[in-house]
Image 1: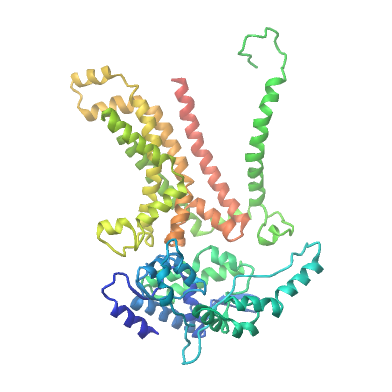
Image 2: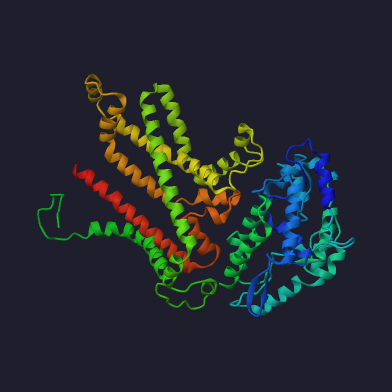
Length: 252
Length: 300
């Protein structure tokens, strides 16, 4: 994939800021598959205490690959986020970019997108280290729960059961969105992007499950680290700095 | 107690009406300012995190939160940064505001109107809107600043120094109109004859500016400086938005944003409150300076 990205960049050398793979510095979600596919992780819990894993050898391997991708294929702003990627895409400055399944809809939106691109967009699940496998994708952010003080906890439980039932989730799959049941991923139909997303979702991971994780995101440790790495900073020392900050927050 | 009205000759009779009329204002103040301040102080003395937010009991920990922040080197770095940023911005605002006020004095009426209109627009723009627009101007890839300078891909926000350069432009740009208008109003009150007499006596322009203009405007300048310092000390929107747009958060936090990130971001409401109280204390000290220059002016 690195070779493909480099070739795309070389073939489009005449376009300023062209990205074989569009990787702006603040999009830390894009770095996660590189981390995970190499066996690395953000942090793991060991006998009740969180330990930062970004500076572990496996994680550093993944982050170094990510840095290579940025240096050799990306023309995205090293301090930018992924909020303008569809604009770059419409300007013809992007070959590939990591994105969720709804991204094509944003690209072809009538207001500031480019509807005529519709037929030219393809999608694939991010490949893994060996042929035929995929890299673990970041999947999540939505939670279902019942409030502890709920007056009708029984009814709420019933509703929750309906929400996660096969029949109900099948409707999501039919519309090309990711169902909450892994068993239904094969039933996802629709565009290229929808099926690619479903394929990626079969192998998916999530951020450390800690009540303090929101604080880690709020402190921008991860974007700070990726921006520094994008700027060519030493991966191992930046990762160690981020680990220290993450450990302090998760255990704090 | 003094009765200045002189209408009621009967002394020592407290009439209730004025106090009743004061009530709504006092009630609003207590509600809007009193309650948050009391809450802030109790938070700072408690152990209050995410669990407490969801109803767990908060226990009193005395000054522990203050001890935590004064032992945190990041807090001191942020404080130093905030004071430096505040000083640079206040000085620039006053200096440039003064320059524009002098310019307004010399301009013809049409150009003056046009300049004032421009100042007015800059002034009336909400901080968020203008920050977003300035950020577009300095955008790494599509910004007009890089295009004009021929420096495609120059990232202004990822280096802390250039980050503050952009932030300073925004803050000063928004601060100038008020300073310029106020000083211009002051300038129109300096009698032409004084300036002419000084010129005839052989004072050069710089001497006239220093010994007549600055001397006459000194009370106004003092108040404007105190106000600018106060405003620039608690700057929030500009820094927060620029951090989202591209700055490295760790290296660019100022006190206001720092307190926000600790309390709302990281759910350490207790420690965030402690930082906020340090901010309040510094602000109160500055305000005392401002009030003193106000009262001194009345004595003059």
